[in-house]
Length: 92
View 1: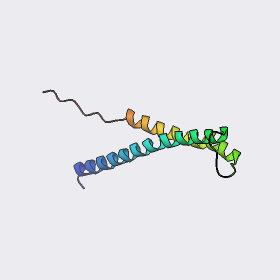
View 2: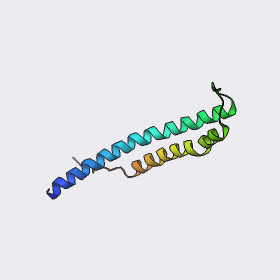
View 3: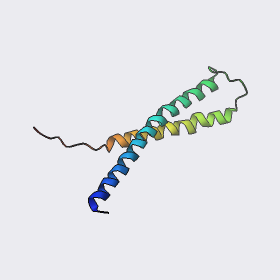
View 4: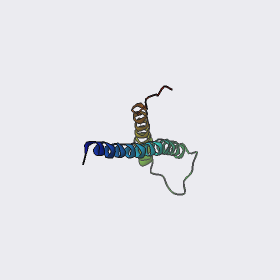
């Protein structure tokens, strides 16, 4: 494979990976935040469940698991935004 063809393939792989990462970060951040709010609402009694609630497990979701999802999504989006490829300006 010629060098310019390899560069084109690497560019396509990089672009598709970045696009998938944008989708992943966009999904992780709001889902993690919504799960934190839901767990907090259940533990505070604002939302009532049909069955019993395992408080230790719900606290684990509220304090550890769900914030990590939101944090991963936010850090992924920030990293992608900071490493965005800027196209050079062409003067007329």
